[in-house]
Length: 115
Length: 114
Image (tube, rainbow over all chains, first blue to last red; front, side, top):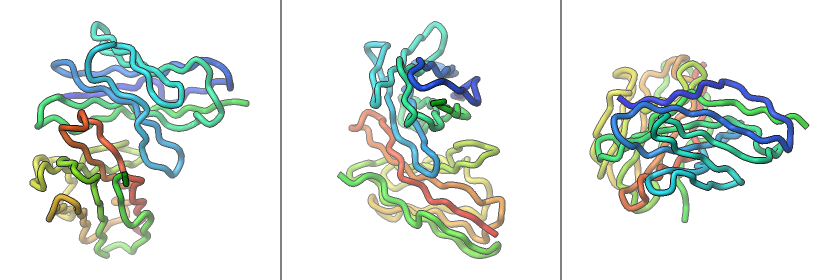
């Protein structure tokens, strides 16, 4: 069964500082990988996704993530955080076959941005 | 294009009442998912459909929950009778093979059972 671990429940950074959110996955083959962001009272917005090819993927809002097969990781990064980035971030994995297309989410990382 | 549309956005109901949540997936998408989000359990898959057929309902918590997809543009999630522990945010999502398995979420239905 696929699973996702986000080891950091809560991260606090200062505005303008760099950010890295960790994500480790467990899956028998190369999965589809995603990062979603959820602002308070809002739905889930897709930040970026990895399907194949270049292991460094660019997303919206200046985010990027790097797929490292050897470490089963898909960490999310941003070089300079803005106050509006405060939200909860979810890493997710999905299988490539029809029967495994559903997303399995990590428990989320809550990001606080200090002025 | 319109995204995944859910209704109602917010609902407060009394224990024992029937609750029906509705979802309109993105046109052309052949997969539809229902997720539930709670503080205790996070985001968990309840059920998903492919071409209107339920594929995996192993996440449906108990018989009080049921989901249907009578056509490609509409799905319902029903809770009968509702209980306070059903209070959660229920998300509908959709995707298609052609969209590269990118799953798009609705804004959620925020359910409170008192």
